[in-house]
Length: 225
Image (cartoon, rainbow, N blue to C red; front, side, top):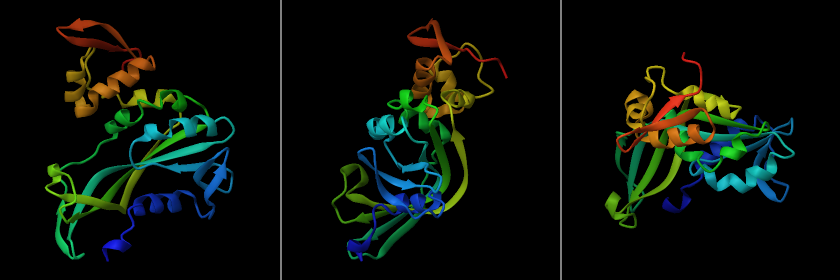
């Protein structure tokens, strides 16, 4: 049973779903293999982690093609652990819930690409099943348990970002001006506040106006909502 587990099942499920029945998978295009191409010619790229790895590929593809980059956010995650014989050892809900703000950590290497008119980032909010095996081959942090695959259980919704300005709309409405990354974290961005401030500063949507102790003070360049 263990050898039949498909580590890319989540990737395959998203690829099939967002190709909208075109049936065109793993298509050569401009020197790269694209995950899927829709009937209208739009390229679909699925990435379940580390979006920055696609930087060079996307930079070339957007020159001549419309591209939709699909990235899942696990708002709910169920952890299923198997023993070395392939039997289910435990099933439990993960205490961690991913939020939309984690996208800022992912896009630090894609800022220039995401400003191109031909690319759309589509976040998919989902319930994901993470399959693990307790065979001693995993890291010490997981006590020898290794992740062997992920599977899409349910989709709750999605959100598209068509311009770099769309990301600035994620600034919390309760955020007072000026603010530090600590303030941004408390307002809702959590542990992703530092990356969010960095991205929005690099793209000109927040400005640094000085420091409060050792922390940068930021102010939004957008109208107050």
